[in-house]
Length: 637
Image (cartoon, rainbow, N blue to C red; front, side, top):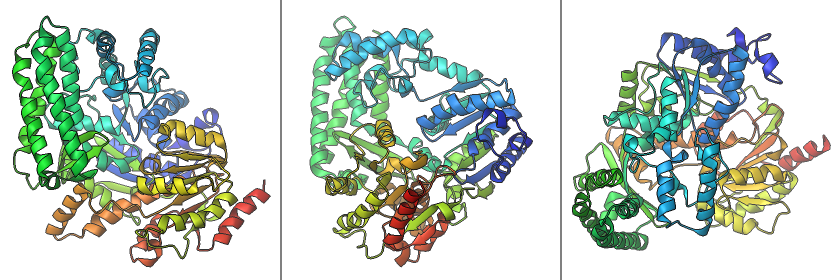
């Protein structure tokens, strides 16, 4: 791959570019996979430059390609920054397109419906809606997610975007001007399409169900941040019934009936009744259920079971009134179709649970969802790949466990995949320290978080803040935030206080901040330079032992003679820990300390699997050595 070697085109377009042996190896392996087909699973350590490693063969090879990234942020970075730079360097004339899920694009029809209906969630929504209307003539793609006209956490989002449930498709009066339809047409015609995992696997699920496809047929699929792929695929091969779906249907029924002569009088009473039953179901779940649990746990509570049955009946009572308005408008007919799909979910829940799936519930605030998840997606996914007859490349900085790829390959059914494991070129031994504090309580003990902070406060002062504190639970995060408040002289940024992107920007701009985060901050967060020099991880990130999906998969593994801990819980925890550790060193000049406060990494036999999967940092159990590490950094300024 001479294009990435010395004297190649990137020396003139990419400041500081230098050939990297690992990058050349990865690019050559990807080029071979594109040329001959098959599947490549490649772990590329931080700093290798895997984006260039796949973009160069893709643009050179001229095969129609879909590139999938882990998040919308990475998707935008790839499409607006990396892809144009590589195209310029190579003089490529391939056409490209960016495609996101429909929830990112303004729906012109629903925007006008919200304006006419006038029942908006808050006063702020009124001004936001007006700002969006003024923005429409200025936007080419209608992508609200990269605009500044609506807040990331605004309650207006569902009023101005569509879902698969409420989209009118080609029957929409605004279809010719539809932003999502235009984006899909461009994607169908482009040589290279950049998507995210949610869209990629949502499309697979649609195809599996026998419906139309969102993504164009491609000869090559590049799945970046591939460690997220098994979990994301599992979500989209699942089905869900939520209170929100039913509430949204009730809201849209009223809006559509209001546009039909005499329609409101027909639907008003039944919708009001259904809404009341929804509230009673929410209340029963709030009083009786945990945040997550199994289907059996839900049915074993008679109050919840009876309220769910009443909701089923209330939803069914909407059918006659809606049917009486059939043909009155496109929106009414769409509501009839949505109601049929909701009823089919209820019908499925009435049937016995097959051995191939697990049913479970989830509560978030007033929201309640019932999920049906396949226990094993490997057959579904591998079958989909075979139908496409395309080359597949899965790459990430964290795919292997103790050097092997069995866990990842097994999850996706990748039987004959080629594998490649390339270590980071960064000098971890010189620039990074791994501190394993001694005398810590067991993680389950009530004294754990207070003891952790007692150990960490002197180190946080020595590092001058510039720290991530990553927690495995929101409860521990909140406890730490309360105990830490007022005890340090650095600004503290706590997950949940503001939207994630704003929190990160505020942390970066502070220069000496301490950010406390949980799951969403363990991966996909890039803070280069001195702004982040200390990463503290509270516990080894094992999945909760009562997670309904993991429990069901454990039972299935055990029935087939497997070891759930070694084959399921441990590999998943190792990959998650590697993600968290990967926040520390993001550039060749970065220095820092990784702290793992869980004593089990040294006292349990499986601890060696975690340690051997981490980059080769200098280990220590001495806090004084950590303080000296930061003092030497200051002395070198």
